[in-house]
Structures are given as C-alpha cells and as structure tokens.
Length: 88
Image 1 (tube, rainbow, N blue to C red):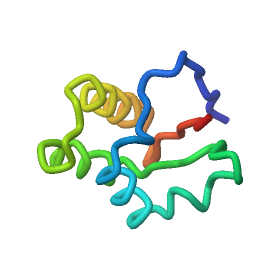
Image 2 (image 1 turned 45 degrees about the horizontal axis):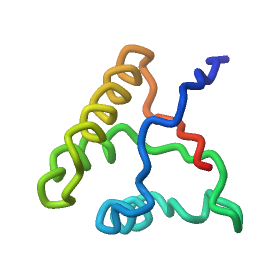
Image 3 (image 1 turned 60 degrees about the vertical axis):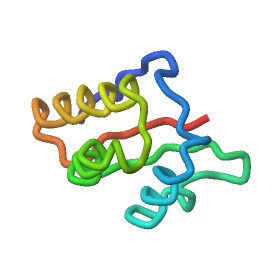
Image 4 (image 1 turned 90 degrees about the vertical axis):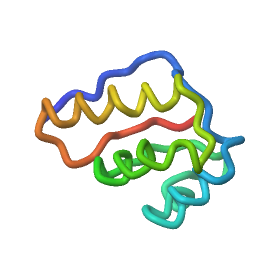
C-alpha cells in the first residue's frame, strides 16, 4: 500500500475555468467532491500530461504547470497511473 504524502496547498484551480471544464469532461472531477467542494480526486497521468501540453490554451500559470510536471514525474517514479489530490 502506498502512503499518500500530504503537502501544504500548492495551487488553487477553482478560478481556472477552462482547466476545470476539461478535468470535469475527462474525469468527472466534480462527481468526486461533496457539496462543499471537498474530497479526494484521482487524476490519470495521461490527463495531466495533456493539461501540461495544453497549458497555453488553458491559460495555466507557470507555477501550476511546474507542479503538474512534478506530480507526473513522481507518479512515473512510483509506476502509478494516477495522481491523487485532496481538494478543500
């Protein structure tokens, strides 16, 4: 069993409308959250790679894009197909 590492909040995506629409379309993001917008969401690595590749179109800032790159690299190191995020 892999341990879920907890870091401080690294980025806020709620105002990135295009990104959130894409995530909801691809992985039904909002269905993983409760009525308060909290929950745990597993995002497939291939979707995160797509997001990084579309970062200009999605208007994702460099800091967020770098965090996604680090999360992808960590998943690949651990041979994981998903990256788990705690949303609050």
